[in-house]
Amino acid sequence: MRLLSCLLILALLSTVLVPRLLPLLPPGYDPFSPLSVNDPPTFITRYKLKRLAGNPAACLAALERASAAGRLSFSPVADTTGPCPLLSPVRVRGFGPVGLSSSFLASCPLALSSAMFVNQVAAPLAAGGLGSALARIDHLGSYACRNIYHRSEGRLSEHAGAQALDVSGFILADGRRITVLRQWSRQDPAGEYLRLAFSQSCGFFGNSLGPGYNAAHANHFHFGMRGFGVCR
Image: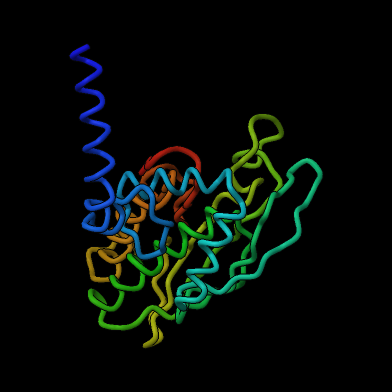
């Protein structure tokens, strides 16, 4: 009887207090609010991204909000079939003022995570640490129907589901070109920018793999959606 009374009191308190407390939560900590590209990479944000992977309509709505806010330029693409089918993919054309070496095909969650990384990490770090706006991101592609490391056998790569983007470099508004291959190890502002951008990317993707992982990633950052914050 006492247990039942306690449960009823807790339920009553939750009904009264939760609606009042939720508006006081900082961005990224409200589990009931729609995901925004401005949300910091908290465990709640990660949870929301994982949930959107199974809800194409809600994920597309999040992309539309990002587009309306000027943070993302994209267009929906028809589903594909075959050995590497895609469900509700999109073509990403840019991130607000930050362009791309070419548009890329992405799953909706990858498009969202990429927009969050560019707007919260890559662009601010360039402006603050390098004294110039980020103008363009160079990449090696996203979608490719293949196994990991192009092996003839084994599991499919994240690229087979448009779930990963390989970023090779960053172009600044003042014309400077910063590449993973040439400047990752340098002890200068460009090298520091790359290392900071990579380390902070880990909060937005399921996995971030760079030159420290293996030789296959010497010239790019692999940003993928599998896992839960793997950073190597």
